[in-house]
Image 1 (cartoon, rainbow, N blue to C red):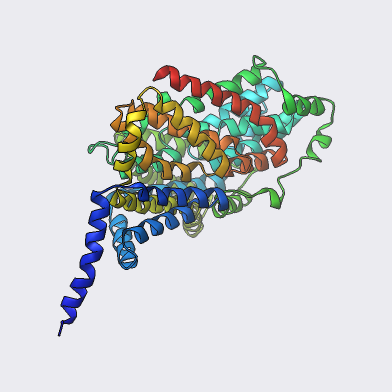
Image 2 (image 1 turned 135 degrees about the vertical axis):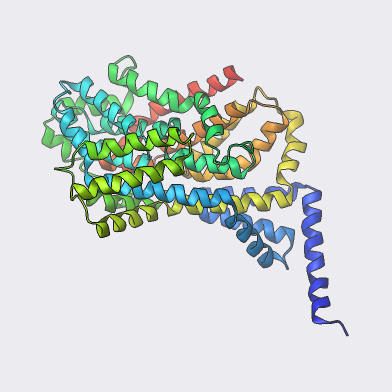
Length: 490
């Protein structure tokens, strides 16, 4: 009679053999998990659920009988990864710092100071643009704070809320992408490490990320485009022209009435939990008596310490907390208990990002077991050139990011497919990374229901669809220029 141990070994052997066979012999079956992910992401606009379901589909293909065991082993292996631990700490740390910055109301002091500088329509919009660059640490913080801070000033000079929202949105995701000390850089840098794109010496992926910044063409062009629109070099067109004409003919009260705020049903976004949690922080902020130095000093310290520690964002965050917390205590802005509550709440706002990257790690591990990267290389490399790849990556990923409203989720899905192909055809790796990040920032800005678009409209007091329709022509022009830019650079 067969012993229990022998029975377990005999049952486990086919499972292991099946997994090994699948990994050794890549086939078209390996395309099923990415298709599942894309279908669910487009249908439900829930990237975390899509990645988890894609991983489950892959594990079922590897071995239906051993799927549960393989899922347990894969998830544990991912959670033991040093990069995951670093990402959880840094993403959560950013959320905690942002919560403290929002609560003190320091950023709103910038708006009060800006009233002494802004003397007309163009200068008020340029001040809005400058504030958007200063608040580079996170696009949520940027989108809500800048609009709320500047809308009274722009109203004074009869600037439409649609124009304000366009400036705010153009300095949210594009700025966060271009500055390597931001939640975007931390998230994408971690994914580069997870997919073996970053070299061994770049444990956080930030150095690799920095090498791609010059090639993030859409982000650069979006920034240039908004400044040219403000200066009148690029003319007002379509819905934006109508909105500006209406604002110039109306009183401030009339501007505020029809576009008062984004309604509850407008706030359909890819990360509803994060958006709602951040809105709660924002509503509790000290908007009237906050001091500018309580916002600027932590931001300067974060940048300075991160550079001092050779682009180690986690050490930079720790040092920033060590000085910022006593600084706030001395001023009696918050008690220790209140600061801890704010930091914990801020950490929670980053949970969607943390869960997305964990799900992406698991999905990538399953795809590797199925041999997906090798199958893609074997079948597409002969028909793909290093010159065409960056432009095609930008084009296809921009469409997906726009359709799903998930700029981070699409990157997590696409990088295990795109980067092995880029290495196989010997493409310019920083250029391909730049194309992926350009597509993500385009999706964040242009999608009608992305979290960034929703928050920019809400912070500016503009109707969501009015904002989306008025800014889309300019975002589309920047995207077209970026596409041809990738062709030229390759």
